Amino acid sequence: MSGTTRQRPTHRKGRATLTRQGVGEAALAFLGRHGPAALTMRSLAAELGVSPRALYNYVDDRRDLITVAAEVFQAAWRPPALDPAPEAWRAGLRAFCADLRAHYRRHPGMTTLALSENITLATHPVMLRNVDALIGFFEAVGLGLADAYRACMETIRLVVGFVEFEDVPRDRPPAGLDPADLAAHPPPWLRTADADGLPRLARLAELAQDDADTRFGFSVDVFTAGIAARAAAGPRRTK
Amino acid sequence: MSGTTRQRPTHRKGRATLTRQGVGEAALAFLGRHGPAALTMRSLAAELGVSPRALYNYVDDRRDLITVAAEVFQAAWRPPALDPAPEAWRAGLRAFCADLRAHYRRHPGMTTLALSENITLATHPVMLRNVDALIGFFEAVGLGLADAYRACMETIRLVVGFVEFEDVPRDRPPAGLDPADLAAHPPPWLRTADADGLPRLARLAELAQDDADTRFGFSVDVFTAGIAARAAAGPRRTK
DNA sequence: ACCTGAACACCGTTCAAGT
DNA sequence: ACCTGAACACCGTTCAAGT
Image (tube, rainbow over all chains, first blue to last red; front, side):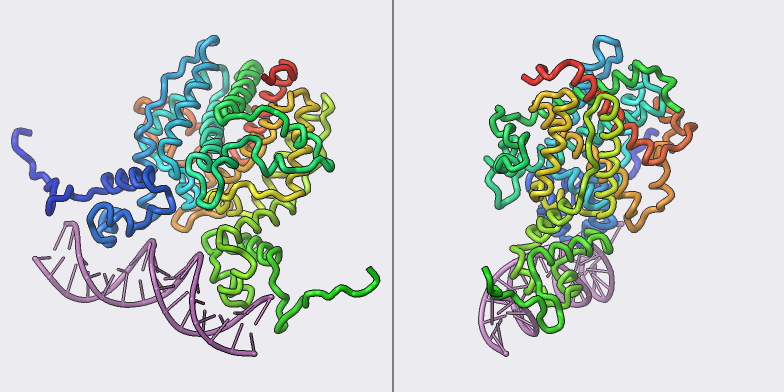
C-alpha cells in the first residue's frame, strides 16, 4: 500500500512496450487508416517497429488480434442516454441508432473483418452495460423482457447491416469502381433495366435520388413503428 | 438458319470445357461443401482438374470469380408469390422472408464472401425481376414508390443480416468454439454477467431459451408492423 | 522474458512456353 | 485458343537462437 510495487518497464529500446491492449489499439487504428485488407500480421508489426513474431507474444493469432481490436472498438462507444417517456422514446431511439451508425463508420472494416473471421461478438464490460441499458429501454417502452432482448439485438443488426451494405461500399469504394456509380441511388444496375416486365424499376429511374441518411431514416422509422405496435399490444405478448 | 452453326466443343481431354458460368457454378458448389476460407483459386482449380492459371481465362481475378458465383446464386432463387390483399400480405411477406433466409443458408459463406470482397450486389436478370416484384408488392400494400423501394432493400438487408449474424456462426461454427455455446440464446457471454448494475441481463438468464426461428420471426413481425403503420399513413408520405 | 531472422507451407497472379 | 509449369511477391505461423 505504501511502497512502490515493481512496475513493468513502459519502454524498451525507445519504443513503448507492447501489451495485448496496445496491440489491439494499434490494429484498430491501422484499420481506420488502411482498411481491412491491409491489416496483416506483418504490416502491423512493421507499423509498430517490431518483427512479426513479436506480436504472437501478446495475441494467439490473427483471429485473436481482431477480437482484441473489436473489444477496444466496442469499449470506445458511449451511447446517448435513452428516455423511455411516451413522447420522447422514438426520437431517442432514432438518435441512438444514428450515433451507433456513426461509431461504426468511424472504423470502416471493423464489422467486415469480424464477420469474415467469424468473431463471435466480443464481450467488453462497457458493451454489456450498453446492452443492458438498451434492453431496459425497450422494457420501459412496453415490451416484455424476451421481446426487449430481441429488439435490442435487432437494433444492433439493423444498424450494422446498414453500415455494412450501404455505407462501407461508399465510404471506402473498391478499387476498380466508379465512386459516382456507388453514390447514385437507386444504383445504375437497377436503372439500366429496360422496361420489359420491370415496370417499377423503370419508374424508379425518374425519382429524385435518395441519400443514405434518408434511407437509414426510413429503416429506423419502420423499426420504431413496429416496436410501437408491439408495445401497444401489451407486454404479455411474450410467450 | 438451316445449317449447323459451328459449336464450341463441350469436352476436352475427357473433362467438360470450362466456361465462365461453369466456373461460377463450381465455385458456388465448392463454397457449400468447404466454406468460404477454403475457396482459393488453387483449390478450385484442383477440384476442376486444371491448373490455377486456366481459371484466369474465364474470370479476371478472385473477386470476379466470386461475383460470378454470386450471380449464379441469385439466379437460383425463385421467391414465393406475394399477394398484397389486405388479409394476406402479412403472412405472404413472412413466407417470403423465410424462403429467402433458407436460400441463403443453403449456401453458407456466400454473403460473408461478397461482403469481405466488397462485391456490389451482382445483378442478374432473375434478380431484377424479383426486386421489381417486391417493390410492386410494397406499393400495392400502400407505400409510395420511393418507400416501396426502400422497404424492398430493407427486407433483403434484414434477412441477410440475420443469416450473417445469427445463422452462419451456428450452422458453420468457427474451429475453436463449443457449438453448444453458440446454440445457446441468450449466449453465455451475456449470461455470465454478475448482477452489478446489469439487472436485465441477470433476469435474462432465467428465461427460456430462444431458438433462431423465434428470433427471426420477431424481427420480421416488427418489420411487418412497421410497414403496416407506414402504409396506413398513406402513400403521400413519400416526400 | 521478449525479441530477431530464417524458414515452411501456403496464397493470388503473371510470364514464357507448349499444343 | 487454351493450356501447363515455373516464378514472383506476398501471406500466417513456427523454429531455433540470441540478449
